[in-house]
Image (cartoon, rainbow, N blue to C red):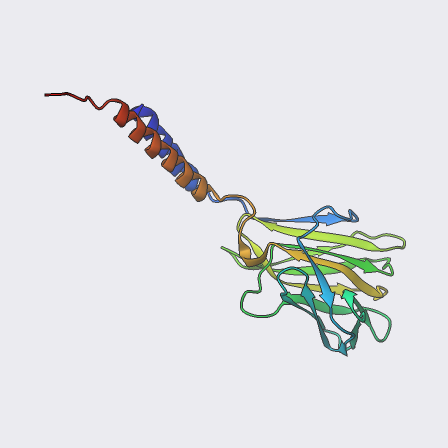
Length: 216
């Protein structure tokens, strides 16, 4: 039993020494492939360079900011929809305001269609902060469903979009989840701690069974 416990602890230590591989997973034209926990909603109609929505469960403020100088407008109330007053979304960014501004999942719909697609750039935090860009596949017409997930301890702090040519008219169905950079599954170090705990409990139970009781 003691040998088993020692080998379990060693295996757990070796497992913990291997960090989870970080990656960003993208989904195209697959509605509901990710379904982040919270929906972005607006309380009233807004028209400005930066407009705001709120997540429906934890009430986190979501900002959508125009980077091309064009004014944005929102739906009047309920699930958020963002449009440009000039009729086309050229460039902008999506992010959470406040100190706790990281998230691991995002999903949204670009409505209106763009023959040459759009470029999305993600500001990725974690052990190695970096930018990661993806271009939506070209399609003749129609809408673009898009979702992305940061894994392996990484998280997003901002999503920037650029549309050339600018023919998307609306950004809607915005969902965000995985707040606080907390992994959805235990990290290797957590598994190692669990294995060590199981080994310690097993060893203690074994010792108790081997205690000899004598009466005078």
